[in-house]
Length: 148
Image (cartoon, rainbow, N blue to C red; front, side, top):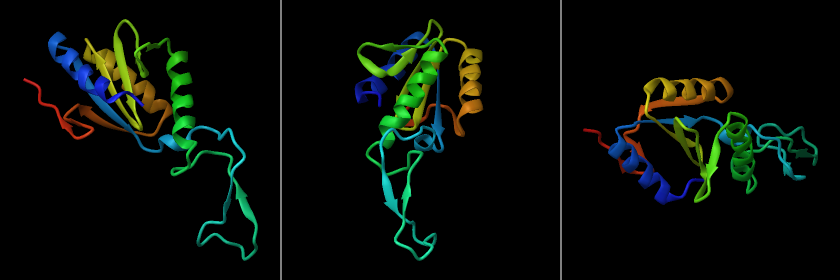
């Protein structure tokens, strides 16, 4: 997850440099990556076949300790494959010459000089992940953002 300070600083930089700032929410962020541990769970309520069998998890689930790590690994590989570099000061902030993407749990803040670049990134992300396009940033982590 991006550091809270990064989430504060990125919109400030964007305002100073007159950049576009948009936000997206990944609907099922924690369900993309195969789980890298052996985890068993009781049969879910309503699914039980009456036996004492357990379920072996192949994919990450919400609520597991490993879920955030699995999601971060997945999105990290995705960003590197698309020529992004990660910021030394914050490993959940990725950048190219034209874009900055900050990841905070399942929210992404996308910053760019050109709206076309931002929209292209949003289309690329939406082609891989099930996402909600929140448009221009207005609220992020309880911080209200107003543009003049």
